[in-house]
Image 1 (spheres, helix red, strand yellow):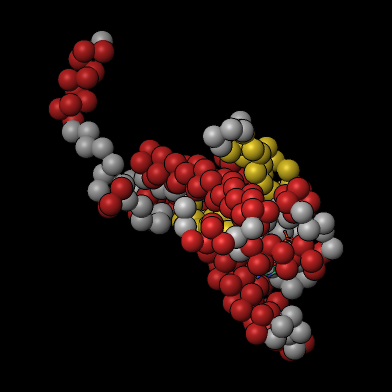
Image 2 (tube, rainbow, N blue to C red):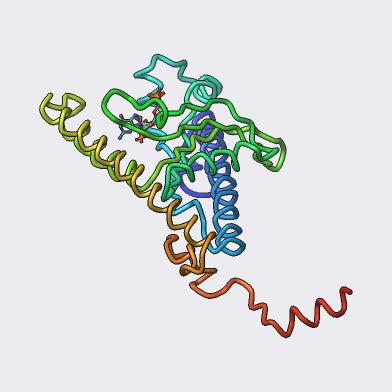
Amino acid sequence: MTDLDVEWPSDLRELRTELTRFMMSYKFATDEMMTKVNILKEEFSAIHDYSPIEHVSHRLKSPEGILKKANRKGYPLDLDGIRENIQDIAGIRITCSFISDTYRVLEMLTSQRDITVLQVKDYIENPKPNGYKSLHLIVAIPVFMSDRVQPVTVEVQIRTVAMDFWASLEHKIFYKYDGAVPPALVGELKEAADVANRLDVDMERLHDQVVSLGASSDAPSARATQPTQHGVDGAAPFPLPRSLLEAFMAKAV
Ligand code: 0O2
């Protein structure tokens, strides 16, 4: 027991325990989702020499951030109300090389049996007026605690590298101007979003051309144009020499 425990009134101690459990459930849900995404990434890299997932990051809203949002939106300030209304306490962001990869990752995640899809927003097909593009997914995932199973919501954002580049700059500008971005800058940002979109479309078209070239001729493998992927720590994940495979085949027949 720490000094803090001795000095704190019991009702505050209880609240602290409850809040800690609450926040931990979101941390565990984030860990589970990160494991799922990393499994997809590693499995794809190992089997196909390519992964639709370039990068994945995560963040947990701070207790202050959660309370601010609940206040701003007028949600009830109790844990049940917050759990029910604020669905982006845990967040995962996945970046992909190509637009088709974002939909492929969405499909791979939403088809997992222990993931309940609560909401899908397709800002790629229907961008926000400022040019923002991304796939937004709200899922619930079961977290197994010592005394209960808690379904916990996680927000997943899936976007291309170009969309991500644009969104992080726009986010900085938005906060710099406290939301009141000058109209000229808004226009320039929209133009930049259009350029980013053209880049996405052109890169995917080029990529598709090279892939079909590789499939239909003796041209160098299309893999050479894919983003470089390595096994764990840059090495092949499991050494499988030909002699071992041949021995395995001989026994299997
Ligand atoms: P942070 O700090 O990234 O978490 P909500 O406000 O979430 O209840 P909303 O606005 O309908 O409801 O949610 P939406 O549209 O799904 O957007 C939620 C998150 O998407 C935002 O979270 C941003 O991360 C991102 N986002 C949405 N629109 C924009 C945009 O125009 N520009 C950028 N850069 N990001 C955007 P937070 O909580 O705003 O921020």
